[in-house]
Image (tube, rainbow, N blue to C red; front, top):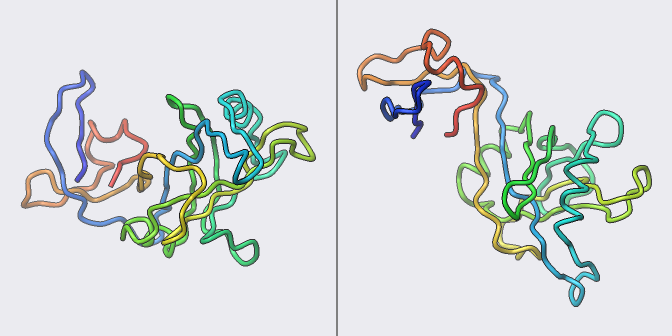
Length: 184
């Protein structure tokens, strides 16, 4: 279900996603960490200051890009790459782009709902806290619990059905043109 909003913030109408063109890049935004003391189990206490440092220092071009994987698989292909990090409330969020179809399907199916972050508290290049990856977990229990659900998104253009009768192209919809992404 997609909600479109007018420029003045008044809800226009709910719309159903009809399709996303083949090859359209998939995007996922997910909370990846929160402050939590894991000293007893993992020997690390993650503070809000660490999360702020990760968000500030994150540079996928000059330092390293955090890769998306399944169950902490250290080899093989990446299923997406983090393009930015930010703090939202108590959570560190990451935006993963160029998701593989396998990763997009896994998140959408609900069979891989849990996440586990991969990071350094003293990264060899930055000397500080730095996110290096995110693992999608199926049945495995994450160390950092209590993260909100991931948001799977699709880059425009999307074909949507506002009238429930005639699909239209998002690019021809002046209200929707202002939205870079649409949550699906």
